[in-house]
Amino acid sequence: MIDKVFRNATLFTPVDRGRPQAGPDQGAVRVVEKGAIWCRDGLIQAVGPEEEVLRSLHPCVPDQETDLEGRCVIPGFVDPHTHLCFAATREREFSLRLQGVEYLEILRRGGGILSTVRSVRETDEEELFLATRRRALSALRFGTTTVEIKSGYGLDTETELKMLRVIRRIGRETPLDVVPTFLGAHAVPEEYRDRSDAFVDLVIEEMIPAVVRQGIARFCDVFCEKGVFSVEQSRRILQAATAAGLGAKIHADEVHDLGGAGLAAEVRAVSAEHLLAASEANLEAMARAGTIAVVLPATAYSLRKPFAPARTMIELGVPVALATDCNPGSSYTESMPFVFGLAVLLTGLSVEEALTAATLNAAYAVGMAERVGSLDVGKQADFLVLEGETPAVIAYHAGVNPVVQVYKKGERLKVKG
Image (cartoon, rainbow, N blue to C red):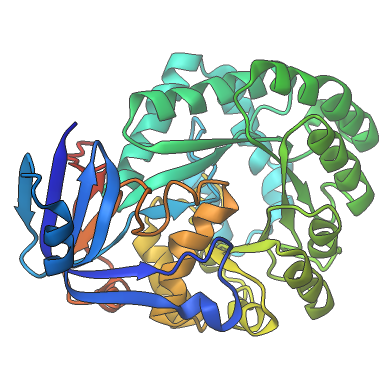
């Protein structure tokens, strides 16, 4: 057993009451001015005022004691929605969008998500792993210690399974905790153009059984949006996935109020994600169902669209989480601090609400709250040391990385690119 004590820190942690935090509770953050953390073999044994933690440690002598010099300490970020596993970027497409070229025209020219699908299909597994690992380690440098990674750039059984193998390797060969999500219904592939129902049949009858046999994915996601998959198609996919033992997630109402948020509540999805166009009635249904709203401010920022109504969600009692949506098309960022700043400055979240959204609620959104997301006894000693006095520095000192030190299971990480 290895005992470590981290002392002389100002601790800020969401309060875990055994469920995602919503409404007024979303902003409940415990502050300990002169705090300490005692961990044994990477798990927190005591956390709180330094005198109390040291007293609980006695007569044990720690193997390592670290003075954090009064700095601000928060839980490690949990990023609950990413597409980190891809091969090629779409920088030229970004420039076209800046010039006003519409997405459908970009798609007609061979761009968009289907260009990413082609590149992932053509890239061998080792090369895809190396590219994904670079982005995962970049996220780690910005303080992400737990990350969800979706498949969805294969759109055929073989490539989706390849992506999931790569995602599993990221969890095994980097310090990150990785939650794999199967997103075979991310788009309709070119070979099924105008035959979306036939592709849905393929997802249900071939892909989901193969994914379950492979045993890697924990969740199944679907892009429920006009021109992609309808509410009925999405319902069929998620019902098949949950019957097979996968948790349900939904890309919902990103562009149009199609009713994806209502479907998320109906099927008791753990989360609905994007939600820029979701109606208040369907958000209220999510609140009643306990479905978490995963808000993606960097995507709205990149696409120059109105932000999801995060303030309204909190007022309606919907638990809110934050994520990067890191992907090559609409949100190419691995930085949770950037997302945190956008949420505070442009969506109306308080610093405390954003901290809960980026840690504890995000952990609930990926089924990891029993291990990460807050500084509590029994959880992993995953925490960040920030440059400032409070978590407000994350939004206040814009455009830089405010994370000075990253700890995973009590180990300080020195992350190289």
